[in-house]
Amino acid sequence: MPLHASHPAVKILSPEDIHRYMDPLSDMLVKSVNLGAAIRFVMPFSKMDARAYWWNEVLPLVQSKQHTLFAAFENQFPVGSVQLIEQMPMNQPHRCEVSKLIVHPDHRRKGIAANLMGALEAHANSLKKSLITLDTKTGDNAERLYKSLGFNAAGVIPNFALDADGKGYHGTTYMYKELRSHA
Ligand SMILES: CC(C)(COP(=O)(O)OP(=O)(O)OC[C@H]1O[C@@H](n2cnc3c(N)ncnc32)[C@H](O)[C@@H]1OP(=O)(O)O)[C@@H](O)C(=O)NCCC(=O)NCCS
Image (cartoon, rainbow, N blue to C red; front, side, top):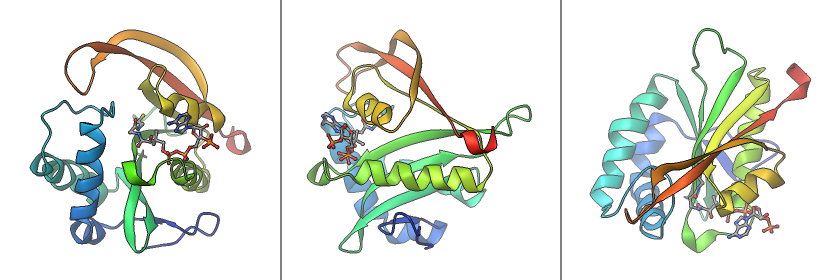
């Protein structure tokens, strides 16, 4: 697990690490979704569903190097994670995308998400990417976080996705950040 010099509590997880940390990663995901996180999943969402996500979806993407998975550690266990989608269409080699930033509910407001995003951005820079994009639930705490990190809102699509409780729809805000050193 490589350490990031600028963000020492954040590591890039290998496929073996996903096996090793399957339990804490799943715990973090299941608790976040059941508290309403707008990250694709809808309740009821069980620990088994969370394990299936890490196992069936993330692991192959990490193995094939399409995604880089970052995790923030406390007391030797992951308490937050984010993925960088590196593999893009042929005409967008300069772009990469943020996916599924999650911090365990017991560890929020301590700067963990900001650290994860810092490590992700440093990695994107090292790959000479010049554009990072993402989408996030409009008006959510995550939108505030991304704005505080220098992301710009490109626009809002109303009624884009179901809320985690399945009771209504919410808009999504598309955001981007240019890494000027490679532009
Ligand atoms: C959004 C989320 C990742 C933030 O994680 P976090 O580790 O608590 O965030 P940080 O402590 O790094 O916060 C950094 C900044 O973001 C903003 N922010 C984060 N959470 C906030 C909240 N609950 N209310 C208001 N602002 C918030 C603030 O500007 C904060 O800086 P400050 O604490 O100095 O005021 C976390 O709440 C989470 O996992 N939510 C559920 C999953 C989700 O929605 N992910 C986003 C997918 S696009």
